[in-house]
Length: 267
Ligand code: 1HE
Picture 1 (cartoon, rainbow, N blue to C red):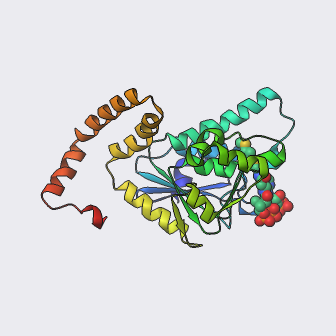
Picture 2 (picture 1 turned 180 degrees about the vertical axis):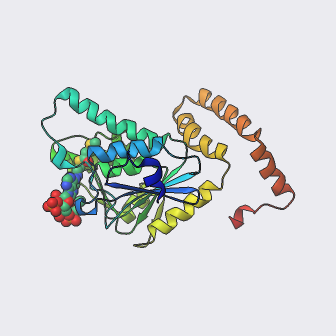
Picture 3 (picture 1 turned 45 degrees about the vertical axis):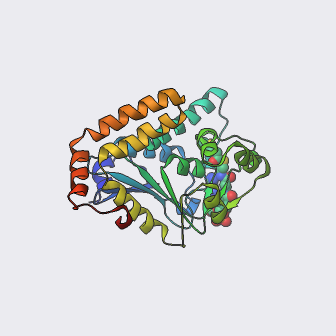
């Protein structure tokens, strides 16, 4: 029995598959016939997955089955929503993606083919993006007569700036994998088919870090980076003291001084 079936039997919809590979949890969008379009069940399933992440998982890889990561919001589900319903639908996405960005462990996304609309919003909630050369990025909300609602206004400008996001939305501009890599949409660019192995390798490295360091990187760093510098320096000092006081840090530092640990050039 796979981990996803054991832990999340009732919570995971058929559009998601979860498994545990050692200390890395792998969550896969499995709706390739619809280009992994994100319906409400999938968004709620993503939220449930990250909420129920078992202690064994020290990193997560997020992937899509088939040729595409995700074609975004399932357009067949847009019905006659009232304004209030529209707000709460968007907030449902925000809640689910917050669980990714500010969850317990780092998340690595594997991008290929369409990384479009809500698919790009989902990818941007991860901490590291590995793109295969087939990946392309677009925000077709402008052309569809709607607006982004899954956190893109906050997360995409952090990566590429407001002007580039406005260009994508106003003109329908599509960035290919090379361009996305150059702009900072992905931190890694790999050959077709190599994304999952690369992401699992990175997740394995992340899982080997001290949990407190990973916590600091995903919880403290983004808050410090957006804080007023005076408060940011204070938060950094406090976080640094908490981290270095841990037994894990003491053992890792001792290991280096006793020549038992790898040099940075050997990682
Ligand atoms: C879909 C969706 C979808 C595919 N919702 N069903 N996103 C978009 O505007 C992107 C819309 N999709 C596309 O432009 C294309 O599908 C792709 C360029 C991504 C891929 O093209 P292709 O040729 O590989 O596939 P296809 O033939 O267009 O689609 C295959 C099937 O998937 C087809 O269904 P079928 O029943 O006819 O086989 C498509 O209808 C279906 N499909 N994409 C529903 N998105 C929180 S707000 C976020 C706002 C947004 O994300 S807006 C952007 C939405």
